[in-house]
Image (tube, rainbow, N blue to C red):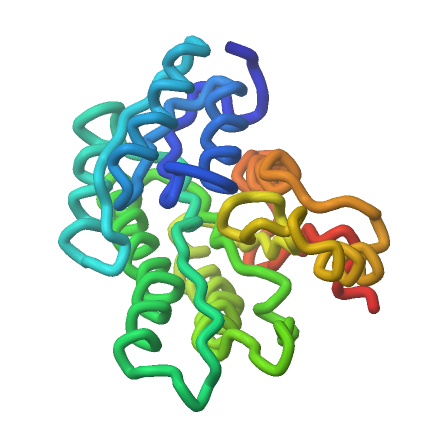
Length: 257
């Protein structure tokens, strides 16, 4: 494995069983961090760990429903038992839906808010409590989206519950950064644009959608998990030791227009 700014650190990455989360786990592991892969999807999570260990990294899987306080606490306890008190947390786990507002049920609203917003709160709280108890500094990166700032519509519909949850991630990041700064814990966020993963759907199969995305983007390609992983690694590392409470947009220029 390589060496880098996170070499020798212990990182917890939620939603690391696929997509952006897997990309983040791979980047941190490649630079020498021990990585705990936390995901509700056991098959995906174990597959990520298998890839990391095959590359010579140190990694462990823990099944985690981020919307459960007990699971969030168990995730941190697993990390402490496996590797020691963690240095980093990446709140990446999330879900999305395109249900029109007038048809959106309370149950679907609650599910998206619970995973995409409450889950970040619960995991950050469990992580921070462990660090404060150990008297150890650390860093958190919360994953938002360009839709934390703007509505991206599909036809006449958007993603009201997703927009609300991810908009909340911005203020969660700022408020938690304020409170945890006294403990030496930095809290920042990354807001991706459209990233080429299964989470974004089969974009390449729709020329109209791809044309729209390319017209909106200054950099004429889709984002890749590695693009987001690079930003996350920077914000976690001591290279960003004077940065807290900020959101870094990694969107190919989407929000410029």
